[in-house]
Image (cartoon, rainbow, N blue to C red; front, side, top):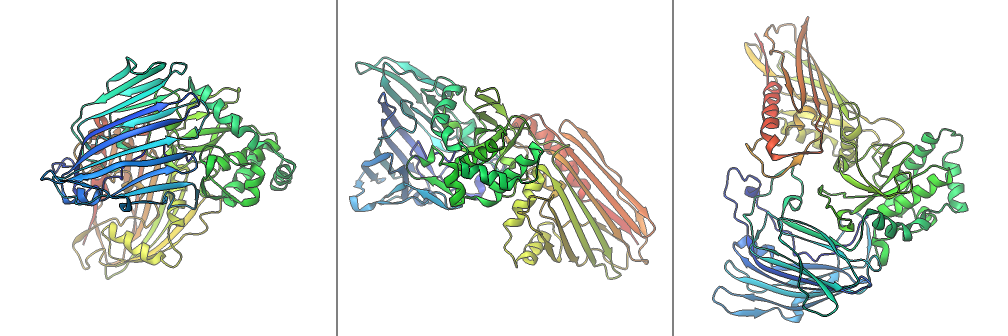
Length: 624
């Protein structure tokens, strides 16, 4: 949904490279949050005042850098933000206040990865005299002067477990006429005796936990941190009704929209073919532009306006696609989902669970996301796979939480075919062709559009180096934005010193040169012996077939032994066959798991599989 921030955040900590390996070093956060006291005073119309005071101790020089500039974002059209006071207390106990000229209000830098139209502002607080042992205190007041959803209030507080947090308290006050639902994990609290007439009060207090180092390939640590989410929405239907009450008319097909739909689907009678054509037109013709001006972060614009302007955010994409589909009597529904690496959805209905919108086609029973110009019809970005989404109309007129389908060996596949010719000097010329579908096609297309034209050879050389191969190459990427055909890409490469001739000797089978790291890429993060956080699991069917033509003078003494692994995560088999002066290597990996995440308890067994596969990938051909 591209929703604006509802919680003011201090800048993200800059994490040292060493922090990524909790199993090998002691983790010492660069700062310690000594206290954080937050209160929300809510009005019956959904507006509120948030008052917050944070006290943080600086532990290291890195901490001084991290917090020298505090960034506090807010929406100028809907919020007011006041810095009540901010000051540094030196290790010797001297207080040094932040003077007004050291508080700068400027345009938000949010959306640097995409064009942005926004009312977002950020107050930059430049902290003085920060050094290890100093403390930084900031007290600010946020007034939500316009409620995103009239009469509704929602929010969340999370104690990120990768940070050193000693104490925090969250208080919510609201009129007796309002009801608040909450879902708290590892933070005690709930209703307390009211300190104001006519008000209900809820309070949660957190008293610290051992911080954990962040880990690679991990979900957002906040998903497994102490947390509480709260909301006045009674259920998901009430949330869906609130969204649709302001979005439904934006998807009404006007005469202009009907004419556009007729033009796009001319000559097509099959409804699925029509839906695919309409989806493809929106995905490839409407640029993604984040729109946060006014209610733009919460409400889509009119479909006809989006079609004219040729840009919009995720909600706008959904509105336009919905209008075009409706013009052809094809049912669809907006879907709210999280587009980042958050997977936890609380047991209450709250907009804070979602930051992205996609589309559900109930008759085809598929999700589509037209904000991505590289996702074929029915395919989604891997970061959406397996997530819980709120479908605002499941086809029966009711809102429902649904799970996005997981990757599978049937739908998500990649195959690399490589032909290598080894010459008498031990060098090799190779060619690789890669075909892919599902999540792997998305990854390949995404990789292709990120390579600047003219840098294909440079990128190829870098990838050869990653695979510990010396040589040069180039990539033939084709048109990764053409959604009318499956995506196929090719490479050519020359490797030096593959084998030492004359023999005897041994050499491993060179890896394919591809946008996809294929089999080895599935086990990229199995170095650490244990994990604390869940990690992503991308399933599917991957195959590498490599034919090596050997020089006549080379005699093969032994081929690697065929491998076969059967595990709870899937299967791996390899085969090595010689025919004349050619050796054909076939390696196949099938991965399947019942969720999109691999839990820490399951990681050691998955790591054992990965290490076994990696050993086979290093197997060598013996020759003389």
